[in-house]
Image (cartoon, rainbow, N blue to C red; front, side, top):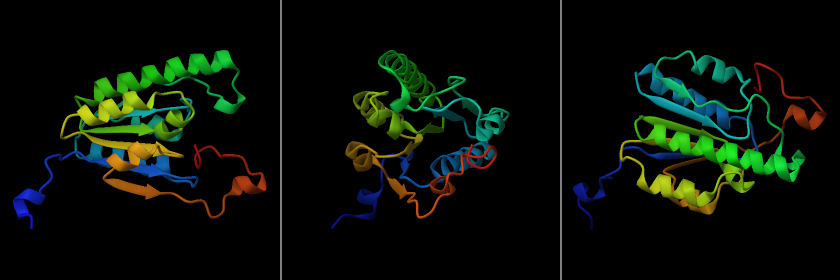
Length: 182
C-alpha cells in the first residue's frame, strides 16, 4: 500500500480536456480564464480555427493579466479550404501554438481553445503538442478544447469533460448568433 506522501502528485498544474459535439467547450474554458484572472493569475489564451470576432475575446483582452494571442480576422472551415489555404492555415495555426507554448511557460493558465480540432484536421502537429505537455512547467494549468481529442491527450488529461449535444438550434437551421454562440 502507498503512503499518503507517495500518493501526492508532484505536478500542481493539471490538464483539462473539454471535448465533444455539444455547446460549452469554449464557454467553460473562458470561464476558467476569467476565474484565474480574477485571482490575479497570468493567463494565455490561444484559439485555433477561429477568427477574432468572438465576444469572449473582446472581454478577455481587457483584463490586465490575460494575453490573447492574435488570430486571423476571418477563418473558413477546413473542409471549405483549398490546398493552398490549408497550407497557409497550417502555418498560422502552428505558429499560434508555438507562441502559446512559449508564453505559457511564464504563465499560470494556458487555454488552447479548439486545439483538438486543429490537431485532428492536421493544422497543428500532435507531436509538438505532446512534447510541450510533457515538458511544461509543473505549475502550469492547461485547458484544451475541441472535438475528437487524440487518445494521447486523453491519456495525459487530469480532467475530462465531454459536452454531448442532445439538441441544438443549428439542427433546425438556426445559425450561430452573436453574443450567444460567438
